[in-house]
Length: 427
Image (cartoon, rainbow, N blue to C red; front, side, top):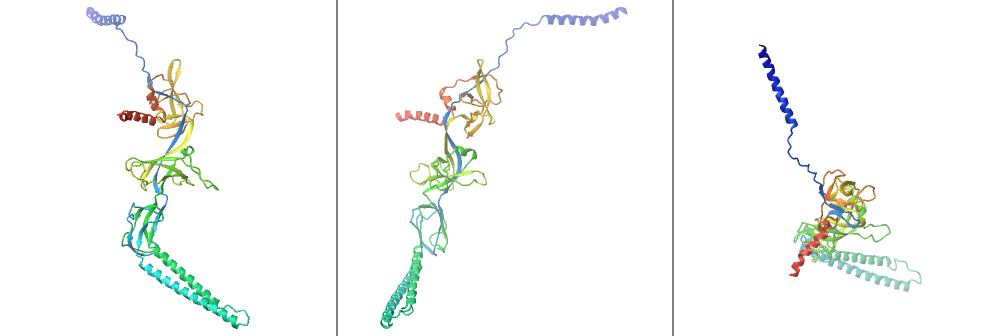
């Protein structure tokens, strides 16, 4: 029994002892496989733009609808049937000042003129007879009056004045009849165009009947709203009391894609005298001179009511710090690259935007610790990066760097277009 008990105890002890010895052997003899060094973190590659002062031409964007400056309702001043209409008396038709647009039946008015003319002749005859009677009364009184003064009744002065009044009344009636006869011809008051006609040949119209809506074609106007932040950068044509001439306005390029690509060069002619109550913005008025001239370079003439986009030439800013909008994060800060102990690191700088359009922004350099001239602005999109992060600069060719300069992109495209056209012209 004792031997069996010893055997049961020794077996587990032996297994534990063998396990312990094996574990010590493994721990004291680790594998000696070769290990490589850890790979260093890759640096962020960025492009930069050295900020330099420049002369910058501000361009203000706006929009508006084309309206005629002079618009009228052509109205009949006499009644009658329309017997003749001009070939240009139609929607969109052009006419010149003095053209007869509509002719009314004038036979009744011609008859009225003859009646009034006859009344005038009769009144003139009565006046001549009364003058003769008055002269004869004066002769008779001088012969029979024994030197006394004759009164007005004896000399027929009231009868003479009445005859003169009859003549004046007949003359006025005759002129009025002639005027009504002239008004049977509806004459254009200025060079213009028919916006919408309301009558046609054979229509019977009465006094004050509206015949057509017309407008002048010497120039058209566009009312343009201006954001309050842009007012300080514009050249506004203001008027002042006791001054006949207003200050000169800026040029404006008006464009539309309604009928192909249309472009018109206009001028800002006036500034409205009140802030719009609905938008709380100031409106200015642009003018296009002679918009329907055949030598206009637009694809088609401008249309009344047409929506157009406007690019208004503003002030020229000297020593301006201009950066692309793509380099601004959350509208308040940018990243620059600085050299610190043989390392190029990212640094975050706040910006104070003075003016901004869809592509570029003008930044103030007056505040301390903000963006300034000479900084290397990061133009690569980074997202959220901590200040002090080491970066690697991308070597960008000069032609590519020019593309990133504010205001240079259009000129670069124009140079490339000219370079492509040169071989064709040589051929």
